[in-house]
Image (cartoon, rainbow, N blue to C red; front, side):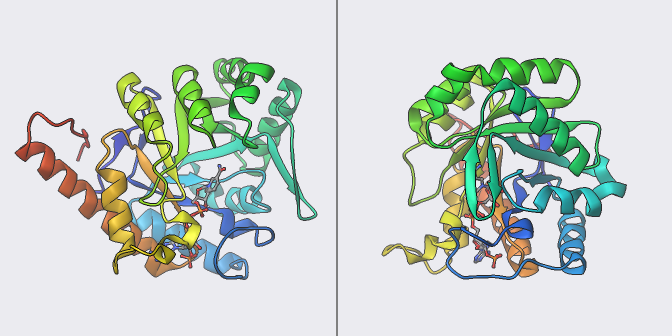
Length: 283
Ligand SMILES: NC(=O)c1ccc[n+]([C@@H]2O[C@H](COP(=O)([O-])OP(=O)(O)OC[C@H]3O[C@@H](n4cnc5c(N)ncnc54)[C@H](OP(=O)(O)O)[C@@H]3O)[C@@H](O)[C@H]2O)c1
């Protein structure tokens, strides 16, 4: 069975790889190296079935990912309880343009809409989808107070923020259950957020583990850039899971295999160096 890890103190257990689903719902104004067509329902359904067969339990979506939420709602309706579904609030994407709204009224509206789209009566996780002004959003809109209220009302199980700054990540680590940060061998700027989450036992989801598909373009990129990234990410014991976006079945399999190898390396290192901090994955 695939290893899982506690997502901080949320009570949720997540697999080392989560499936990112931008490419299931949106192919406009994205930052991937190549243009692509959205997979049809049969291809999407096969990809989700494969993720489930591999043991993956975590899936990441957002209202800003085009039709991603609606498609997942339709394709996962009969297996809702297998999945830990993470969605977001605050960013909308329509007619090729992103807009942002972090008011309590919009958060509530967006979460009720996500529940309808995902055909569920609860959301496992809701993250504030930052526009880059992390601290202003946290301090100016009371986003976590509103999400805490919706959590108490039973609409969601955990909340947090997908941050874009070090300061915002540190603030989110203090007040939320989960922080989603960019972390890969080319981007270490937010590592202190993971350190802080580890100290406070908060969940950490890594986004852009492969630099949105650009990681191999770095001058010092290794031939096996996926393994290098996974080794880098999972050497930090604070990382709960890496959300990797793919619509390619072989890539999905490789990403998981290489994440498991990376975890095994990091556990071996921890056993051989008992004074180093170590991750606690459960079989
Ligand atoms: N909250 C936010 O602000 C935010 C921002 C960005 C992302 N995210 C979340 O994080 C997820 C991941 O981020 P991301 O999609 O931007 O970047 P990513 O996971 O770093 O990279 C995805 C890109 O890498 C390619 N890829 C995946 N596995 C590969 C492999 N084994 N070998 C070669 N290429 C591979 C994918 O293409 P193929 O389809 O061909 O595999 C895709 O183009 C998103 O899907 C989303 O769920 C959140």
